[in-house]
Length: 305
Image (cartoon, rainbow, N blue to C red; front, side, top):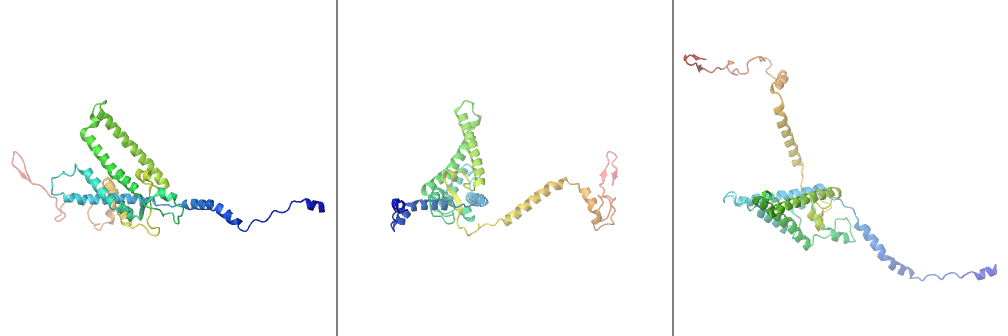
């Protein structure tokens, strides 16, 4: 027993008292990166209806401004503004962009829906998120590209379509350069519509990026204030839509109904039950006599009533 105990290795020395400090410093970066990763994955859900309503309100706002601007030129030559309509739309869209997005403010429709633009690239790189709605606004480059794509792109495309239609590119010869340019314009338009439709399906599934411009710029709409609802109530509009649909249904169905059948159906419930149902409908309601039109027979000149 004594020989075996003497041959056993001695116990390891205890670690120094500050050994945990080195271990903590070595593992601290890993713990912080893992914590930041989990914090950056806070799921947030932005109402898709609010985002669509914001776009619709912006369109209505542009239409109202355009109507007011057109009234200024009401005394001028009729139809003068028709040829400058793309420039007018681009000017109004530029004004809205200049006094909203450029100065880090939401557009009127976005503000009414309690939304704002956020740079999603900078938000994904941030490590400290509390509600998932934090994040900086758009950068200067994103604002400029947004203006170029939305305002300049729409103006150039509208002018190109009007110019090609006025010059009749589609009616040119099959092998002419104008015919190829017209086919290219149609194909580009088709590709854009297909891409917009695909982006719409992705937006309905994920709730991010309404348009291709927002997806390309990583400009996401998030709530401006998490504790505030949208500032627009659609109760009156919903009632108005219901009544409009009901009136259109009546206008469609009433001409298909037989009026005489309805009269016979409601006749027992009418107040005038003693009226003769077999009477002539053409009788005068005051004297109860049938009106007659006098005429003169030819060639005997007999007058009859």
